Length: 197
Image 1 (cartoon, rainbow, N blue to C red):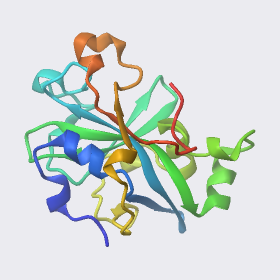
Image 2: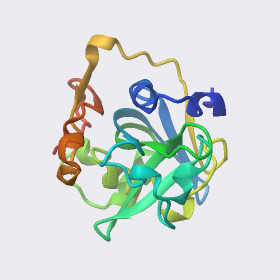
Image 3: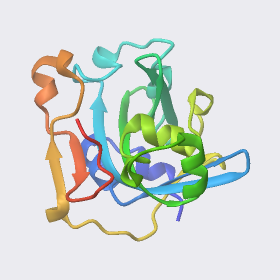
Image 4: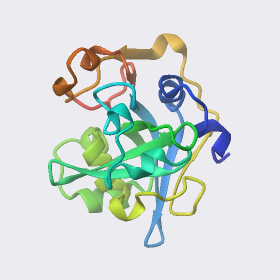
């Protein structure tokens, strides 16, 4: 079942980030469908310094974060990696969840072709830049509705037990000071596709 607007438009981005574990991200790019189970997420809110929209500062880059939940926010990181985020909350409130890792299960051959040679199969989608390349996600999808036919998320009934979810600080945001210590990164413990810091 495709996730509806009501899932995304709730006010607690941290809760949504936890609940996205076990959901399935799909893309249909150039007629090719790829999909994977989400196994790692990070929550970002305009109230904390790790967020692109900290202090409710709106820019050309982060403008989509201020739209209603249920859209894709794709941005370029380090000038080379496209990172995929799910916009949450109501219009005017800039919250989003970064999808950091997937366990691939559909279109793996297509993903492998897009990624090129890799040493370890578990590296195919084990990081936010890796998964976007594998899934064919780039900035053309920035602002796309997650109810669309190019990129969407589904609930396939996969349940992740609370005891199997680990919460830890987010990766790569040392600039955020004390906010970098917030335990807003969520992972499925023991999953081999989780990214490495």
